[in-house]
Image 1: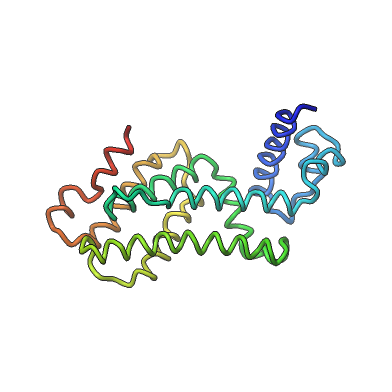
Image 2: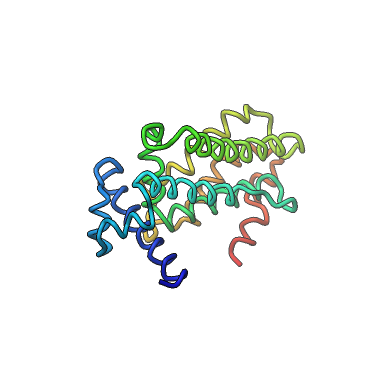
Length: 214
């Protein structure tokens, strides 16, 4: 089988497993269930993924990589522009793959049961990096005088919970688009952070709003 076909099959298995895990839970899904939906025998499924836990770990790794990519800063952005862009990217990711986000958070309390210690440590390391990016962004805004002084640790945790928790209700074709929701989230937060009254009232999202429309 050509490598590209094998990769396509692996992606198909991952997509099917993600949907099943989201609907039934990891514990409630068998490898037989994945094989049945894809139309393969279980031995072939094990050729691509040696265990069910490796499928789940793949979901976690990909989600972590996408989230880290979403919160990487651009030095040309102000802190408020970066925060808006973080929010927009994160919500776009959730809208594009709501089942993957659901699996990540639904199974999070149990990953020590499914993963090795090394795998759990990798997941936690990525989550810490995401927190550090957001925390550092808020601190940058405070240090530059763009934001009011605040407890950036608490605010970073609250921001992450607010944005990533949207997987519970955000839908690709819902009443409000992910871009509109990102603007609402960002405005609610930034209007309490921005020190300059003119900026706060006239352009709280900064140039990030215009650049995201391109």
